[in-house]
Length: 161
Image (cartoon, rainbow, N blue to C red; front, side):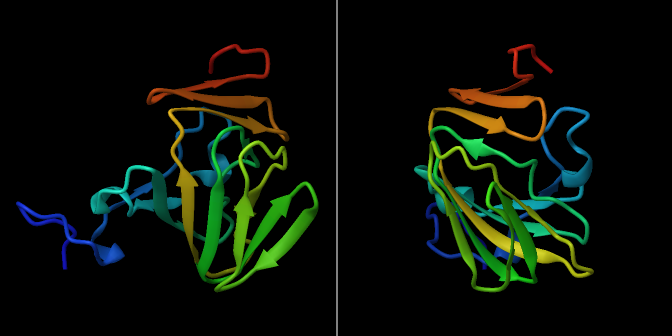
């Protein structure tokens, strides 16, 4: 089943029909551990505009992102397949199928997922879509800004990458 017909957007789709994108938009030198991440944007083909929905696959050894937190956007994760380590300011926590985690906007608690197993991990990510957003990376010299669709990475002093 496809998500669209010429005159009608259907309310359901098979995620296997949605192409994925491997990699990250991080500037060098921050891409490495996230370079093999596969992201399928599944909300857009369904016409969702108020929040983003993605299915992410992490091969063994991969990270979901650099550890970060969002100033203006909520983020929700649900593990679909495999086991992954969630790392936050409180330390590591193993999550398995059906486990969920939430990261409220403005809570300065850096988070990311690491696949420390020998099997791929799949998870659902849902996040709000603020017109303007800033994200902070407590472990590295990186900040992110989005203003009306324009993405920009800087170091902590504001110097662009």
